[in-house]
Image (cartoon, rainbow, N blue to C red; front, side, top):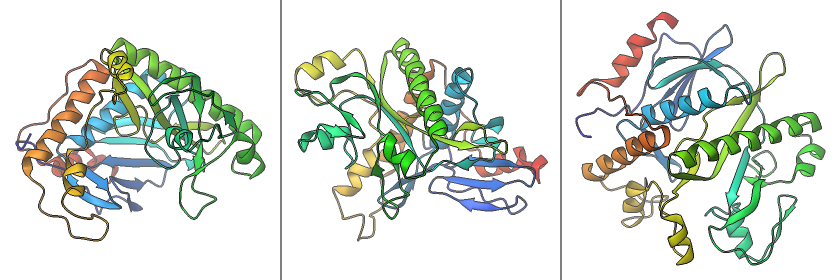
Length: 316
């Protein structure tokens, strides 16, 4: 993978209203369109720790695969793809609730249902989970576990539907729409993933409203970074043994860093190229497994920033 140059950034001065995200460069055009460029930055520990060649293209093209296969369920923000790393979409007013859908008792964060369940909680997100569930076990049916950063100083806060509506984050009509969309998108994702030998265990969706107030799917959908995928063939045996399900392990770099320093307070040591290459290969494998199509590699040695600039010249 070292033959492919990473995209550290894509700053194009001729494009207006630049905003730098953790892994994306964003530009807002005067006519209501937004250009989103997925870089290869790997964000962890509240900073960019590396650039993984091909990562941005994998995420953009994986999301494209799913946007195209779910467009009959709900509208999405996509207008066109002028480059493998770029989507041009409608500019939306993002709704302040992230819709997380879970089909299994899994997760590692403080707001995940597995963490809460192991703490003894059965009432969460306005739902009641049954007793006797094991780690990574399938739930009786997929559930919505929405979160918002609106209530707690920027930290994800688990919420119930009632809290969301009574707190004014969404109207009842908006909640009814986004919850129905999220469950339908997840059902489609699980069905198509299983055809590819994968279990879509959980995922997250972001929605926004367009200029007409219509609710539109934004950001990305069912990518390896926004979703938890497990391999279906090995899941039963691993679950029966109490083991961790087999997944796309993309954490080579994160794990290596944590083993050598406190990444929140110390400088990072130089990251070996071998780890970066391994991570890049996992992203490509994820794309090909999820979509069932070969990855379209760029030209070896091509500067992705220069290519993106050429492909976006008509927007200057």
